[in-house]
Image 1: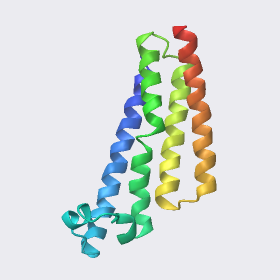
Image 2 (image 1 turned 90 degrees about the horizontal axis):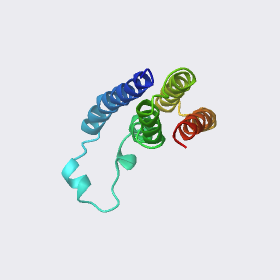
Image 3 (image 1 turned 60 degrees about the vertical axis):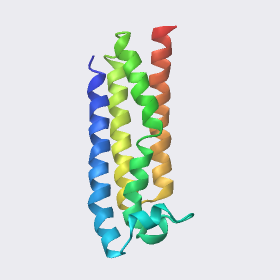
Image 4 (image 1 turned 90 degrees about the vertical axis):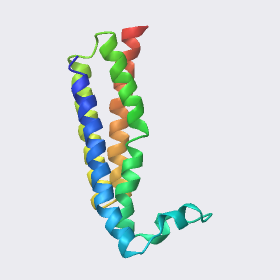
Length: 139
């Protein structure tokens, strides 16, 4: 069941990014005098058009933490249920979490796309390895 530790760690990191997003976004919205109701009711309007890009980087990363990591959560839960979530699986899960945290920091601070892509690609390869382990355990 050690595989559940990195699952909880990534979920916690997602909430750190949520806090960081709102800690930067709310003051930027106040400075830009954004009316949320008006924004919600104006077709085509977007915070991307109204807030500094550096503020939006955190929001975009928060969204990214709800994409590929959902597969990570599912695969880790499968590994836990079939009692194959120790050893190599846990190590790979921690590597995945570390790569996602680094990806978040790169996107939120400097947002260098080629570097982000390399980190994302590495995390995807780790995720594929976890999927292979899960497939070997259940098939």
